[in-house]
Image: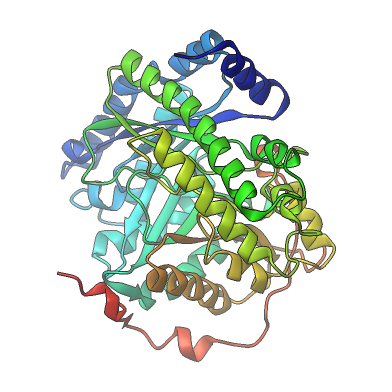
Length: 454
């Protein structure tokens, strides 16, 4: 039974500390839409999405109004399109038509993003996989709301270096296609290792093939709440610090659980998971970087940053799994540079480098996220960055990802404005030494020895 203190505490977290439900994401299986006729396939996709998600936005708005909990985004994820379009698509342009159908469906139901323009190529690429990947630059330039992801490795299968090499080229092509918007198309493209099937956050969301026909996944966020809680225990020892984070994460997750169950009931769609990631915004006070400062660092990037982030991630997960039986997705702390004011400031001061961010990805929720790099960065260098991140994920049995934005026409130190939740970012320097001979060897890097567990 809730008491008046708990009700007041939750209200304060919402009103003063920027607690919100970052997204309600409906996952929709499109496997039953498969057809060898491209026109029929597009018609089936549009019909199913608009039928199942027609009340998604209004339901989220109703819950927000009735419960007083901000529900910032309503989104859709679908089955990886490379699997759905394989029989019908004969060219990359055919896949682009599916992207346009997804975009039209998203506009019709009113969601801000639809994820799943994706391929899973961690062990090899089918013809359909390769066609979809090669279509990504054009697909993202022709659509507003479609998000794309490619999984290039896993702990079980190793790393597909052919796909990693190709993705370096695709990212640069995507940047070129959207250069008039500071290469914003790359903000809708993520390269994964160990991608989860139930992630509700964009741009990496897709609906895994082992999922039900439709599910509701909710992503909660509360870096401001955690920061305010830590202000109350400033100077205390690590045991008190960890307990405080854990208890706060529990409260945040309970709010998400309430919203998820209510959305599931009203939409008649099974509840999937709660993703309890701390997802920052550019707003002051809504920052993972500020949490790290409250833990005791002068700024993100200072010695001790990786340890502090590991502590934060672990305690968030411990508190969250006590609050919900179904925790999934990514769950932890995001460190997107452009979306976190304290991270932006640390980069601008020279305290936070790409290499330090890479070290932090060993213990954070995802990986190198929303990082602007010079537009003349070679494709092989981008592939090398992807390979490094994928290796971290493969060896450590965790999800890692790369969402870098080579900003065409801009160089180190210049600022890129993305707007909204995507924020802004200084263009960061990249190591200029070549890795071309490594990246272009071809083939696969084998899975690590600890992957053999059958």
